Length: 89
Image 1: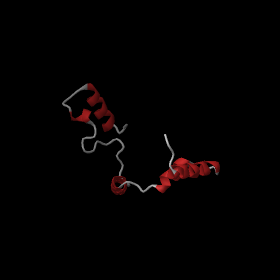
Image 2: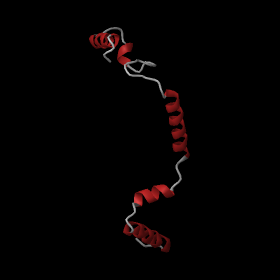
Image 3: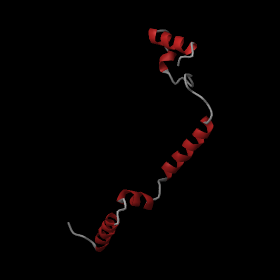
Image 4: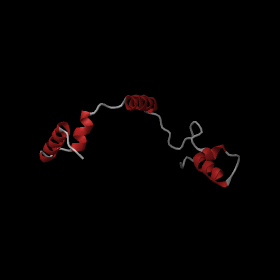
């Protein structure tokens, strides 16, 4: 494999970063622009966290998050319902 001048300069730069005790990984990540999809996902997550802030979902079924509770009747469902009614979970 042959080296180009640009490739050699990049390797020398990375070696200098390593010699100075810096992290090549963090330096590389800081030099890259985040992908647009990642930015959109971060915005959606922040929006959802703001919406959920202050709400308590402990021991509550919301939007059918427990598929077991959707079935007709079984022992596990009956046990969970009993615990929920007694505010144990």
